[in-house]
Length: 362
Image 1 (spheres, one colour):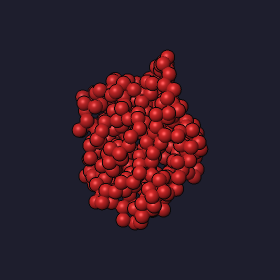
Image 2 (cartoon, helix red, strand yellow; image 1 turned 90 degrees about the vertical axis):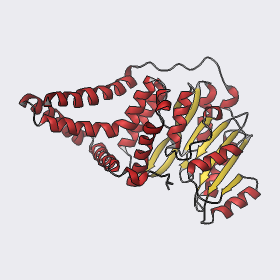
Image 3 (cartoon, helix red, strand yellow; image 1 turned 135 degrees about the horizontal axis):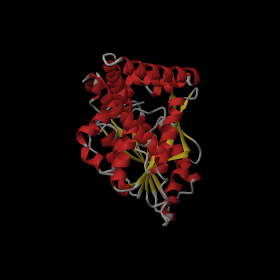
Image 4 (cartoon, helix red, strand yellow; image 1 turned 180 degrees about the vertical axis):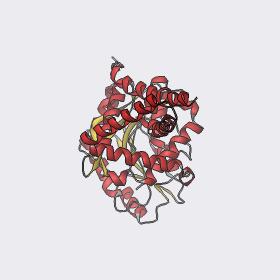
């Protein structure tokens, strides 16, 4: 019986689903672009609406508005608007936004009492008048021509959303580099199952509007709805967003919010999940959920291995130890980051209630 538990946990639930994900990224054929061309969208000829939700960003919001304005101009987009919604800001942001609106640089809307990012985005989408949406956060910086590169992917009418690539400041992060590579492979084989909330482009027709006001991961919710519309979500590696360093980006508070959001998707939006197709479900599992499931299953398998026959026990722990040793010698920073992330994710599962409400990330 204990041996059966071991084989179910390690082989049936851990190894096989993980193999489906990684092998799928290797052996699945690349998606061929559509023979049709959407020249107008790829050049933003019918207009682009940039939507920004802002809460207490007095030190950054003007820089962000000017950055996006400059990006549109460099991309040759003449029909654009920047819609900024202040969600209960009380730090002086509203005064800055009022001045920017007077200078005709933005369309400004104020939500006097803070109601959360999804509501602010809903207000922005109600105002937006163009068929393409750019969603952007305030804090991060973009590489030149990032919006131009995002738009170029809409030449394929089967592409519904395009996400930028996130690069963390400071020392190079092997775990972040691996994540970006996996997202790129997912894009080539179908759709990547998430977008970088700091900067992404989406066809307005693929966005479920309004967002549920309690949705935690609005960017994942958007990408799932794009796939529901049978459009692709792809990563544009030339569009680069620079964010904080690894330690700040993977803070416990942020990881807790992500954990709660992923569980909310399973609990409340199963119909949406089943609408995206089996391949994309495998990609979603590999990118978002495997980091929670794998450590639990490995721990269960290791515990059961202690009480099985000596052959299973020796094989399991010797192979696991050898893999860890080789990786520790050849990829020490990757092993360090991975272990820190695993312990962080497991800790967040124990305190989900703390993150049950929408919170803003700085």
